[in-house]
Length: 122
Image 1 (tube, rainbow, N blue to C red):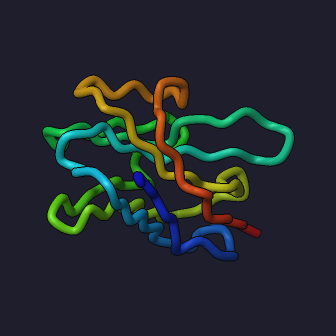
Image 2: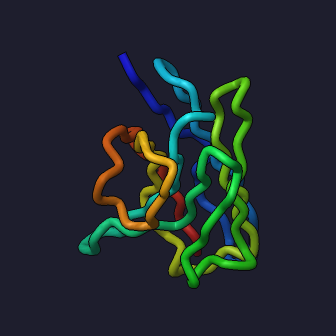
């Protein structure tokens, strides 16, 4: 089975920081696009950040300069460091993967998803 499990969410005051983790099993992160996505109540799921098999990352304009995506291929672990958090960052955050080397920021096409971890900024 292919599984992705997120952790690290919680409640934080605006301006604070959190680091999310996503541990994968069943495949090698080094051969997949990996991404973080988020969905707030009543809103569509949106891309936050992606990292391709070469280690190149992309960010949504809303988080660029504040968030950083990284991965540990050996440990099949994906991270999202979130700094200077804003109320607008409040959402359920999901880890996802797709088996391509081109990593679009939109959630469509990512076939494997974790269950999500809640981030609440107040």
